[in-house]
Length: 389
Ligand SMILES: [Fe+2]
Ligand SMILES: [Fe+2]
Image 1 (tube, protein in one colour):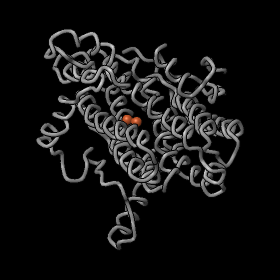
Image 2 (tube, rainbow, N blue to C red):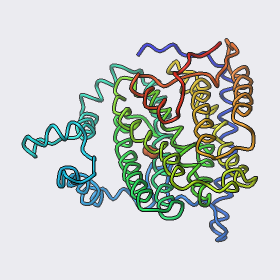
Image 3 (cartoon, protein in one colour):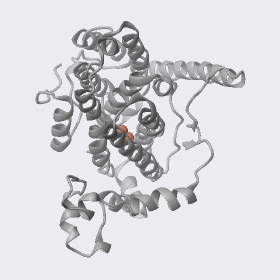
């Protein structure tokens, strides 16, 4: 594809990579030592080097149980149409009158498509190998993130929320995160490029969220990580071959909407919402997301995308959502966004040949009118603004 690559200063890119390697070695060795000494260490039972959970692929088990469960998943609306359930899609409702065997979800159709050689040939036509590797680097961040989302949402379900409705919602989220992980892996592998390990900055966000207690886990998962995933799917679903990501985008929008629906029924106490310690914990979970953005500058640049426009767009929505649902941050949202914007400009000035100051926190990188409309509803945003230079 004909992207307009952003020209970076190679020495600065090399410095960013070298720094990540150094911190990566330190954190992973420290976690390994702590684990040996039974003092904690890495909590996630996930092997990001092999893009696999500990214990192996278990493909047979996946096909026998997970695939089969999805295949046999019944809809209450179909079985008991008189009930209050509305769980059939429009297509399913339309097809209900037809033969049951012809039932096919959009996801299943797309999944068959991405496995085909035709799909791989299309990727080779559309992208250079450098562009394919950049897409895999970015998508695998979300792939590893989905693995953690699966683990974290399981814990949120068992320890952070109360009530039947909330548990039912979280149960669906666990199922959807599992689906995201396995489907994304197929999609990423179709690119035939090496899949990188997690960057240490992502590792820190994910591990801190997984180790967080109670509602802070809910913040890390359903506000920060979901906000990140939602924005990334909203950006990438416009690229050839990645259209399936708009279905992921739809799922993630439900996950980001969960805190506001949950707290409408069960409001936080003032201490849970505005306490000094919860605010600091949220900051600690969020902080590694800043160097994480810088780490992906090169991959975004290859695709003609400005990482800080994406990051500004994402942080604006995440901060807005966080405050709206009552997860206060140590600094008021509008001030925090100005600080983040100044930091992004400083980072961009160091790494770009043709640096132009921008109001990154006003950027909007989600493409597609359907995706923009979904986000406007979830985040209660005004109509998206074009980036101000
Ligand atoms: Fe997900
Ligand atoms: Fe999600």
